[in-house]
Image 1: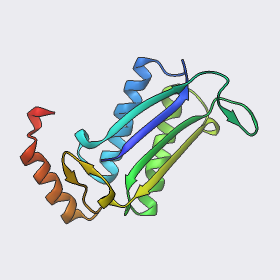
Image 2: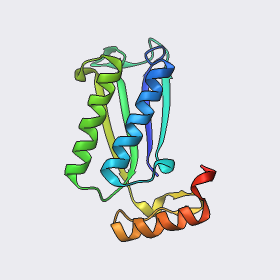
Image 3: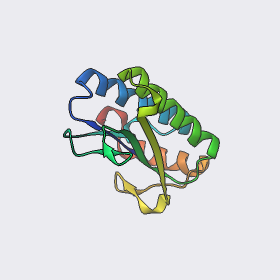
Length: 142
């Protein structure tokens, strides 16, 4: 359901770092929200040197942003952002000053995954949706 995009300058992340970030982001989101792992998506984008600016001058920002279903508490959102910022710094060795994490809420009815409109972020609705997902798509197919 959530789509995380990690955007960095080309060459900043190697394959091992991308794997660590993807696994870490997936784990953080799953632990904080209960979302099943197959439904957490992480995409890496890289931009060429010279096309990014910060503070009105050439820069190389590192951004983790995500589209997530609305309804999470401020505490959960803050914890997720803090954990992802720390993860990025641990994986890359960069200081937190160089990382931006942003979560963008969308109404759950505005998304569809696996042919089903995503549920509200209420435990009963999520449990029913997850059960239907697993019924349609058994774990061995992931």
